[in-house]
Length: 109
Image (spheres, rainbow, N blue to C red):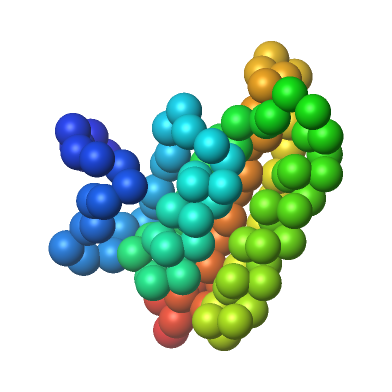
């Protein structure tokens, strides 16, 4: 594991990495866009990201973001599995795990 001190929204690895972990305190739409970029461009195979919840209409906002993420991957022709959970000890965010399926399959060959 390597920790880098860099701008999380502009940094891109020279070579694809296995995991991207994002716990940036930012609007959830911006973190979702970062997730789309990293997985969509093949910069990582799996990602864990926390999406901070708005004060109102929390479920509706998370659903909207997840739908947007799924649509973005479909438009790129990228297959992913998405899991998203609100963990008991942090009710102000949801934690999402995404795995790029086509990259994982190619790596096993």
